[in-house]
Amino acid sequence: MLLSIDEGITGYRDDSLETVKQNRDDYEMPLKILSYKDLYGWTMDEIVAQIGRKNNCTFCGVFRRQALDRGAAMLNVKCIATGHNADDIAETVLMNVLRGDIARLKRCTAITTGSEGTIPRVKPLKYTYEKEIVMYAHYKKLVYFSTECVFAPNAYRGHARALLKDMEKIRPSCIMDIIYSGETMSIKEEVSLPTQRLCIRCNFVSSQEVCKACVLLEGLNKGLPKLGIGKSSKVKKLLDEYNTRQNNLETAVKDLEDCNITDKKTSKTCKNISNGFKQKECNATNCCTNKTERNVEKNNEKLQTVLDKYSLENNSQVKLDEEDSDDSEIKHQDEDDTCSSSCGRLGVGF
Ligand code: SF4
Image 1 (spheres, rainbow, N blue to C red):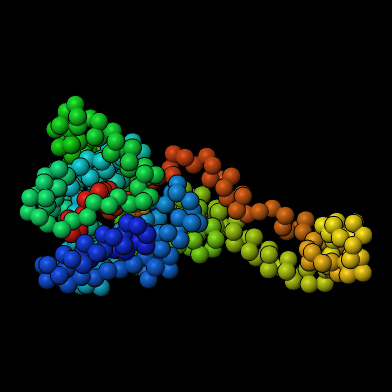
Image 2 (image 1 turned 90 degrees about the vertical axis):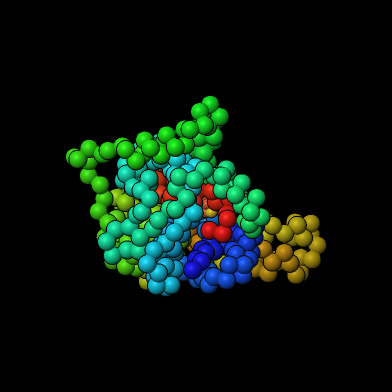
């Protein structure tokens, strides 16, 4: 069975899905397409509009990993075969070394992955160079797509890829050598690694009580898209702060009910008044420009007391941005290796 994930990336996935549909028809295989929009309520285009182009691959990788699990569960299959090739695996090894992600480094070279109770994944093309696959597809006249994801240039993986390509020019065997290094690397026993369990919210595999996909989604839905970008302790702190502020806001709204807030027309914006024209029509409460200025009565001490009490002049989003600013070392921590890393460079029906 063919399983495709539609991330909702205009100019990339819409094109490549046409190729997959062609594969479905050519090989007469059933195809299931699952979209982020249906699963999470957000397309990647919408997420990028919220988060910007810096951490978007974190969302995409985490959501894709879970979407594949969900799709496989729907199809009731025993195994998921992904199209990762040797170049992809070597890039992933390098990337995990560069960011010190020991847990992923340990498992990224495994040809079969999957903990107990989850649907295992296999990488049948693990030892096949990307070039070989392209040549095979070319000479066999297979239908494949080569559109690169429009967001790929900003992905952290791109740096590992560029480094690998440079090294390959000097030493062509370096791709296999890096895979071999990853396979034989052993982790000290005293290094604690996260244990796999099930997310208490969605019931899919996670290394935390609440999985990364649920945390990211919660951030998006609460208007705090950076919520899931960072260490879990920081995420918890931000969420606690957000909830406290929400509770404060609700109480503040009640307290504000008897405060006197008025809108009054401003005469400063209307030239007609100052020029002496249409003075009959224009005055401080009824102006032809229809421009108003929201004024809070300065003598409303109660309102000011309430604003001070709940710190309502502070913007929570600004605060979050500031708190995240020192987090550069972990920004790419969750770009997932399920991205097939090529992100469109090559898609021979996978
Ligand atoms: Fe998703 Fe890959 Fe595109 Fe990043 S580069 S947005 S992970 S498809």
